[in-house]
Amino acid sequence: MINLKNAREIEGLALANEISANTLRIAKEMIRPGVTTEQLDEAMRKYIHSRGAKPDFLGYGGFPKTACISINEEVIHGIPGNRVIREGDIVSVDVGAEIGGWCGDNAYTFMIGEVDPVRKKLCEVTKECLFRGVAQARKGNRLGDIGYAVQSHAEANGFSVVRDYVGHGVGRDMHEDPEVPNFGIAGRGLRLIPGMVIAIEPMIVAGDYKVKVLDNGWTVVTADGSSAAHYEVTVAITEDEPRILSDWRPLL
Ligand code: MG
Image (cartoon, rainbow, N blue to C red):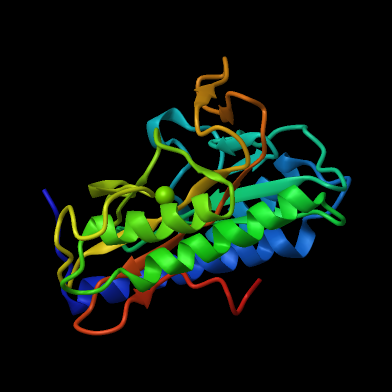
């Protein structure tokens, strides 16, 4: 069931997502070679609390940390710990804050220093995929228009789209209906109407799209060990232009 949001509810989601976007800014300010993923996570947790919010990933399905931090061949759901970030890594930080009962959700893949050309192109193309998808998030379009926009751009650049994980509705629950695939056929699927709020989150990989879950039960990695990038914003469908609630572009 899709929960449509009224104007007041969208303002609640906008606040949660503004805090979420600024949490990525906190990560950006300290991410560099030598920092551990645990240190990043701790700084983000403190920031979210300083805003009177709470981390919405913490405890979600038993997840033990504030953010998912996924490095190189890790696609999503990396668990912060003592791993040290190194020059040349690409580091996806996926984080959300909850306030007033509303959830935020967003992600950004940071390039650490000099990264190899494939990783650099992968990050740039994945970010482009995200905003091509966002541009389709408008009244009257269909979910397939978003998926097609993401997939066609990724594949035109020689990359693959992860199939096993998708975007989602966002509201009082971080994961609501509908599912928002990063692949699809233009003109097909659910029709978008004002009041829908969705997270669009392309997970694009340099090699084959198959993934597997590590023994920790969480971390999703590419099966072939190729690199992955992941960018995410939460978007409200309106009467006219898509409204990005967690727009981190001015902050990062
Ligand atoms: Mg998400």
